[in-house]
Amino acid sequence: MGRPVVLKGTVKVRLKDGVLDPQGQTIRRALAQMGYDWVRNVRTGRTFEVEIEAEDLLTARGRLEEISSKLLANPVIESFQVEVRS
Amino acid sequence: MGRPVVLKGTVKVRLKDGVLDPQGQTIRRALAQMGYDWVRNVRTGRTFEVEIEAEDLLTARGRLEEISSKLLANPVIESFQVEVRS
Image: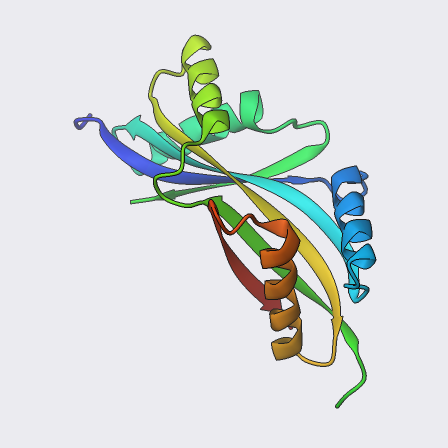
């Protein structure tokens, strides 16, 4: 096992297909009222840029997946995608 | 000018470097309290999946940039990145 280093990762969280997005709908209506009526649909998502201490990429990836399912995303209504850069 | 079609785009909004991210700091502290003390830093961002009516990719891209700077992002503290798929 090597020395821990700090690795950078990204978690992208989005609502699952079929789950209503009231925030997105509000934004679409606001845009329409501003004259931007060519906007058909808006769906919102969140991203997290995370610095993680780990021995290697695989460990960092596993840790990122763990905190995503435990805290960053709500697995009932959201899906997430994890990426770690070397 | 062709017939308008509906094109899909993504806007990624993030805080500019140096801008404090209280939400990210709160998440990092919450994770540390849960025992995930290998998380060094968290910065939050937002994404918008937008369907836009436009004649072509270039027009759609311009429209996406316009609504990003007018509503989706706060240009004072945030930067944004726009992408349109054909």
